[in-house]
Image 1 (tube, one colour):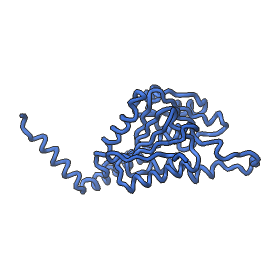
Image 2 (cartoon, rainbow, N blue to C red):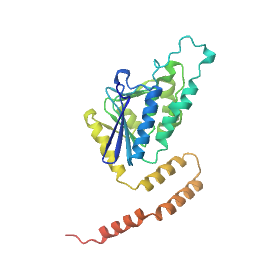
Image 3 (cartoon, helix red, strand yellow):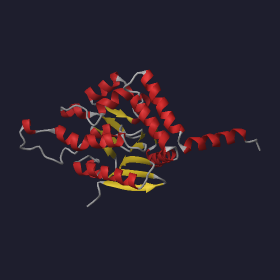
Image 4 (cartoon, rainbow, N blue to C red):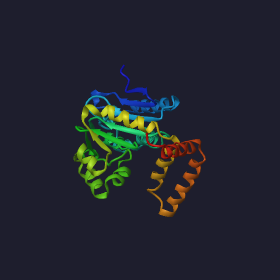
Length: 260
């Protein structure tokens, strides 16, 4: 049986590849369990950055609506929120709270929960042919997997409402122009670009990355004085680590080095 998620570790970068191309990499509960296991493996093997991508022509088409049939279930007994709480929300929170940076490489279609999952990392990059569609409204549902939290913060309320209430397709170039994602690459260049970006991140101070990511998250919910104190506390912690003194010494050595 084909593994729903492929795992690779290279140059301190763990890559998780959704591997259900016949279903456009849609998410069933087993696939989410495999993603969580892959994350655990990456941390156990001391990966310093994580890449999440998909196989085939899609990144992820969202929840696998055919995985668990609702036929014969009375409406009052349907509880979509239970699966959200037990699995779908868990993978989003896990990616968001990872102690290492996450690069999401959207290689094709990202729809529904897949388009929400695409925003769960620190960097979202996309192939030029990729697209994003928050199509929940066409299923008589609301956006989930953190989409209602991410979209207004990334593109503003007006565009967030347009994407959520209309469910239109957004091409990768426009997504980058709007600030929904970081960068767009030619399709064949995307895997190498994702690896290169993750390797760059893996080479930076893990503590500084962790503190910076936490500070940027905190800034969304506090006023300026509170954020200034958050920064001061973070700098105190970082200034006491060996990495800071080593970096300062290297900087001063470069500055005083004579040309030639």
